Length: 461
Ligand SMILES: *Cc1c(COP(=O)(O)O)cnc(C)c1O
Image (tube, rainbow, N blue to C red; front, side, top):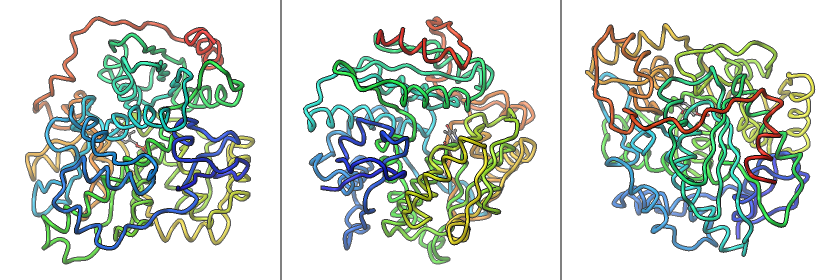
């Protein structure tokens, strides 16, 4: 059985099932596998002919062997997707490939993991004999919230509560959440930004003592059950790259361009690489909230600055939670060092990566940022060259890429104002899931320090 340990080293190792149920480790760190599994001999060949659910199950099983065959689970999770869950598409010979991850029910890449997570939690409850009710508490910068609500709605034995920044999400994102259906869901605005919402939620995890009646956990990308399904699409993308684009593959390992916020998506690429998938540089692309550009280039993580609102709100983040897992891995799995960096971050808002961690970071990642105007120009450029419409997050990453693979994280219809403005009024098809006519159900808003009371009332704890 594979065991999972905390990045901060102060927690006993647990099973994959336990890690998924707990979300955050008790010492405040994030769960990571004690050892990253490597792809078995011939794995890439074996998965070539599989459909996506089987590929995903094969990858998940390497991390969660005690879960047994996961094919039925992933098949069910991806059944609601519109066509292929993660196609690698060529829109023009002269542009990079796009890995489209937004064919799920909420039209953002979060569905790739959040349709799987509730099912993994269900299975983990069986395996551990967990019978308490599961409370899912989540902060969102826009897309996680809706995907979590959709993933957990009407799942027996669970309740889900989402906090979103009142002024920090697009109109469509907000409408998707406040009209959510389901008997077990709640949505509340926070008068603040994503970092306020995320910090408020994290505080509750450390403040609420263990209970006999409920288990409090998270659907945020700190949960191991979010990370693992994301690794699968990088393995699948590489298999497709070899199979479908041999002339591109002849140029060597593809660089991967990821529009990044909480560092969950790009971290999954790092895990895929460590498992033996020959990916090139992992390019971390930020918008104007470019804290990650600085820490990767110069080794200084500094969150002491104002958050800027951009046309790519799901990347408007200054405290990037999953970066902790990268610090842990690239420091050579040094949990004392990782804990020290995170302590400094929470006490002063700043830490500096020493050597050799700083160089290891630059070896693995490249970091670049693009502002809203550059992203808009690129939406236009890709449309002019290929008649292909991309969203502002994807455009931020695509603006940096000449070749390789751009990870496409949202359907452009989630951000219609920004995309239409970039295209000078050209309209494009909007999926039915995004033309919302349902009545609004949720109206509440709280200040950041009111999050705790709201949570206690909602879950009646
Ligand atoms: C969440 C999100 C991102 C950022 O992903 P992280 O895993 O937080 O780095 C980028 N684009 C879109 C559309 C998203 O929803």
